[in-house]
Length: 430
Ligand code: PSV
Ligand code: MN
Image (cartoon, rainbow, N blue to C red; front, top):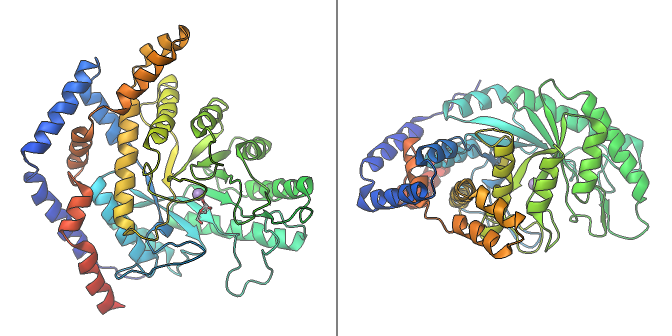
């Protein structure tokens, strides 16, 4: 079993404690402003703080290295070189935000010969593991059969068998790290008309999923993630929420749809998709990010913060209906960075998600319902905008500080020069 050092983690915790004492007058002003505002809405600020404190996000392991597009990739100094170093970076995001205690692994990218040590190390850093993602969209070293023309949906039964086995192997690995869900996203599809048979490929998809579902470990959920295009540009087998929904229904209760915000064509009403899946009891969770055109994998809320708020609004609306006092879905992030420091990018994303969630909690639902009843779109919009523009930053800082995090995560991260110190350390050790 590998022994990993955690002294830097304790140092960081100490630095955060010292910083909290210095949080300052401006923070107190912002905090009072937020609480006063919430009180003026007739809501309990304590209750909102409690709900915010229950928000738990999962960080994608693959976000911590330099991402890229098909054109370029810029490696950066201090970049993690294996899953242990990625876990280390993830723990920094969790420490500073107090709201990202889980990591989603990608198999076999994150394969290590010693998953028990990985689990133990993560645990020491306050982290656990969320859903495990499987990669059947590329060929892996020494792989016998190629996924070039599809994996779970291939027209070749041997390739399908091979892909199913990889998913089973992924779940076995996930059991060792403590995951409870598996996410199947496929690149399967075609680039040219005629290349793939639409109905047969979907049948193959279902047939493979049924085999996987039969082996789903007890207590696990199978998430089906759809995407309209890329890497297949003409046709993707699981191209939208309708396909994913049909597949999940054909499997059973333990199969759910996963919505990746970037997996929609421009103009799609994602919040309505979210609401419909919630209504049908088939929404399992999210891959949060933002996008302008397609699967851009940008920082959540960087392009369309209002859309993010509207999505959170649907979650909160369903949460209230179900009398759940915290989000009941799996809230994962799926981003990949080619120009930002990944830790900064994830810190920004956590802040954006917390802000959108907090604002969604502040929507005056009675007034909204009244406006909808009376056919008053102006009043309805004013209700939503009032919540969207609410001054909540002081409250978010307070919740973070209470959890031992930073008042201003990005500011603190820059101040302690984590990446610079890490670069030296990783150079020496590497
Ligand atoms: C595909 O674009 C995706 O959104 C899936 O979730 C993958 O597992 C992930 O990105 C990483 O490639
Ligand atoms: Mn995704």
